[in-house]
Structures are given as structure tokens and as C-alpha cells.
Image 1 (cartoon, rainbow, N blue to C red):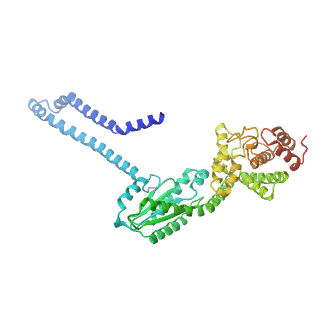
Image 2: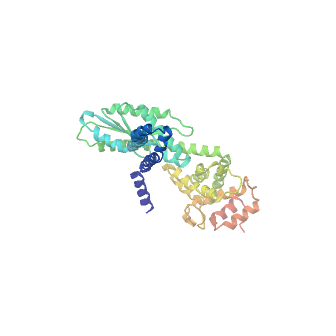
Image 3: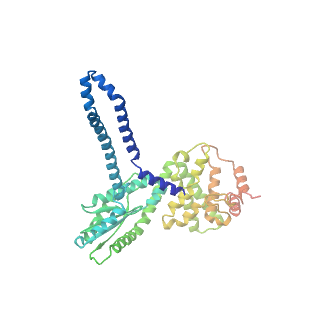
Length: 432
């Protein structure tokens, strides 16, 4: 209902967009007429009190009024027409251009296809381009950096395009280039040129990477939609190959950036990885499983890259809003890691490392064995390191206090079996 009212209000606003200006012009014209009626005689008498002169003034008074008010009306209407003209230009721009990148939009591209799909323009080539890693960059560093990456991509492609080529933003991270009278060999050269240009585009945090694919229409009996799909399929083949390495590099950049923002996080993650290793060995994990635990320990807080520095490094207690912001980090970490297939298993554990055995954790409220085993181990290692390490707002807790907290929360916050193994075999303390 609210959405319907918003649309209705927008429709009314557009329908009566210049009503205010029209009313203002009418009121100004009305005010000028009233003032003329009320004060024109006095003005004429002030100019001359002679009867002959007054008669002469009254004779031409109406003509003077028409000339003055016509000029005023002309100025007002000219201002209104300029607004209308500018509004039409803006509407035309929005109809055919993408505001973020300055390239044409999908609507314009589809219009141009209909216009250019003629025999005289054969061969017609099309290149599909996709910005790699955009979702991960948006999750980790925010949409502002992602938007800048899209602008850089559009500028890089535009710098290679020739006169007559049509660059359009096809979707969120995709662009399409329409190339009339262009052979497959020429399209391949343009593809190489775009890659070379992107390779020189280096931002402060990430490199611009674009996957490309192309196809060429040679005969009129081929539907252009088929050519576009072939180009898209070719682009996705390249993207699968290129993305894995890029995402791995992006994850390394994210971790490095997080540790530069907060060196304490690096030391904490290393310790959590080491503690998780010891727990895994005590439980009887294989070497591969222990290595996986160590890696999860290093990556468990990667989602904190999206948390404001002021909150992440705050010395005092967090406010409710700041606590909610901190609690986003498992979900952000999951989105970052799940972008690459080789880290999908790790992503599930990172998402669940703040779940509790009793189901009172976050973000999904899982309980008991619903929580992945590795995540239960990381949760214990994370809490132990937090209690045993000095923090800006408190000193490290005594061993006796830590042991008491571990026993007290076994079966509530922590898996009771894992907690007992940790206490008896890793800490070498008595359970009872």
C-alpha cells in the first residue's frame, strides 16, 4: 500500500511539476494589474497636475501598462521555458544513459540493435564485459569503492572504443559493446586493448579486472539474440578461469587491510588458529582437518573489515547500535569467503562461529550439533583467547577465573564435550 502511495505521489508530482511556477506568474501578473489600477492615477498626477498633460497621460496609460506587463510576462515565461527545456534534457539523459558510469543504458542499447541490425552494417560484433570480484569488494570495502571500480571499468573500455562503437551498461557489473562493421579479428584486438587498459588501472586497494567474451554476426538470417548469448557464454568461460585467482588475491588484500587497521586482530587470529589446532589434535583430527581448523582460526574475523575503525578500536563499552554493527561480521565474512568455491566450507564455519550450544547465539540462532563442529571449536578458542588476553578496557583474566567460566558455560555457550577435552587435554586441568 505504501509503495502504491509513493508511486501515486510521484505521478502527481510529475503531472503538476510546473504548477507552482504557473501560479507564481499568474499572481505576479495579477499583482501588477491591481497596483496599476490603485496607483496609476496618483502616479500620473505626481508627474503633472496640468489638465492637458493629465489627459495626455491617461490616453497612453493603458498602452504603457500593456508594454510593461508584457515585458514582465516575457521574462517570467522565458525562465519557465528554460526550466522545462533543462528538465526535458535531464529526462532524455536518464532515459538513455547510466548515471553512475556515463555510458549508455540497456534501453538505448536495445534501441540501437533494432536500428543497426541491417545488412549494410555486417559483420556486427558484440563484446560482453563483466567486472570481476565486485560483490566481494562491495561486501568488504563498501559500495563507494565498488561504484568507483565500475566507473574505472567504463572509462577503460571507453578509451579503447572507436567512433561509432556503442558502450552500454547491461546490468549491475556487466557492460556490452556493440561494434557495427567489425570482424571477429577486430573484436579480438579490441578485447586485448581493453584488457591492457584495465591492467594499467590500479586503485589504492584493488586492481581493475574484467572478464570479456565476444561473437560476430556474419549473416542476416542469424538472430542477434543468439550472438549476444554466445558472447555472454564466452565471457563466463573466461570469468570462471580468472575469478578464482582474483578472489584469492582479494581475500589476501582484505586480510592485510584488516590487520593494518587493527594489528590486535592479527595477533588474536593467529592465537585462535593455534588454540583450535591443539583442540583438533586432542580430539583426534587428521592433519588435513587440523590445518583447516588453523585456517578458519585465521579467517574467522575477516568480516570485521566492514566494521568502522572507530567501533573496532573502541576502548570503552559498545553502545547497542555498535554491538549490532559488530554482530554483522560473521555474515559479512561468510559473503566474502563464499564468493570462491575453494573456501565455501570455511565460509559456513565463519558464519557460525558466534552461535551458542543453547541456541542463543547469532546470526541464525543454531543450537547443539546444528552448529558445524569446526565452528564450535573456533567459538571455544575465540572465547578462551578473549579471556586470557589483555584488552584496552580490562586486563587478562586469571587462570582460575577462566577455568571457572569455561566450566560454567559448558552446555550453554560451548559444546560440553569439546570444552571438557580442551580443559583436560589442552590446558591439562582437572574437570572436577
